[in-house]
Image 1 (cartoon, one colour):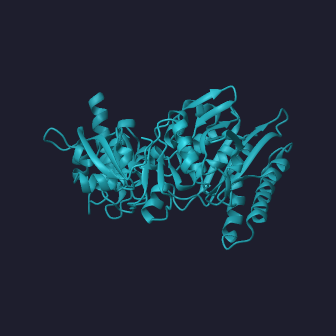
Image 2: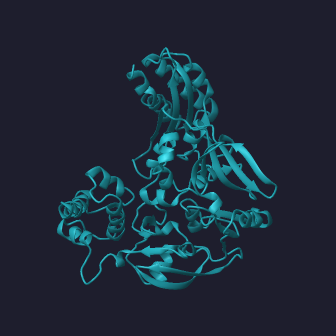
Image 3: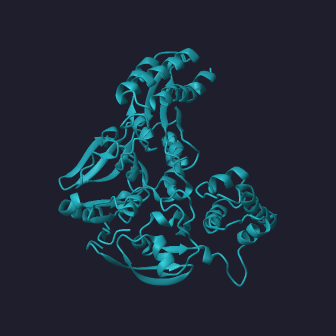
Length: 164
Length: 286
């Protein structure tokens, strides 16, 4: 694509489903996901990559969707919080967040869930410090981190028991 | 969000440099986007074209070559942090990458973008400088090589020309030496460093400093190697008094370069203190 474009045709996968879109050259990935695909789980908190409320997985890696152009999604596989649940049941992380009261206002929750999902994929049994590092790009201003860490630990513990 | 900008995505270095030779002054390269997207959002970006350099194979990869340790400009900070080659041959760079930004930022940001953005606080600058790194640039007239400390002209002012692209960095590998990278920020994650430092050092047969490279970051307009500190410590057996004097010299040099500013009241003791922490393990190990 050496021809400069004002409107960019892109094709990619969202939560396993192939989509094709025309996006603006200066449009963010977060804007396209929320406004064009109506997947409003990812939130715009700060818009400058500090709060992590917009965290999505791009090719299985957690990134800030506010710091990515929509055009960069071309050819990638995107996962949003809407893609966590499957087969009629919520994801173990979602269940653990409920069980451990890790949600208060809920604004940071979709981003935290995606960071936690990426963390557990890389470290299935993380210690408390690894969890804190893995979630350090996500700010929560009301629930408090203790319950969130406990929820992630509970899922990791479940994984450990499964493998034993 | 801007509606008048145009997006272009070259798939080879040749295409990228070709586009830049025609439109360089109106173009901003987009690597990880963690700095650029902020200026797109705020409307500060004046460029007509955004050139996405993320799909250029020539900018990728980490390899030990005949010239040294080669790291592609498009390598992400997370890729550097998890590289076994970097862990062995440039552990001080790895350490700076482990505490860079946040996990999300590390997955997107690239080392080339960090240097091209020319922030005085760029975390990868001090480690690259102590490794006496050469930046390889590609432009309409072919390849140009510059020492990495010359890549920044001033705060957020790059010496990389508008028709040039950083292709890769060549580091002098350093295996088995003492190394450290430390920074002070307002919090651990996502804080812009207020003071940062990198060191590579080695003791000689009698336990004195036989080799040392020291770089100060976030305290001068451009991160810089401080030869006065290196010269003072070379040949000396490190004890607490010698390290304290090294820290005093580093702070003195910072004030000489940056002038006395409102932040100096904080930064002068911070540089001294961080310098002590940086080299204390070399004292303790005797």
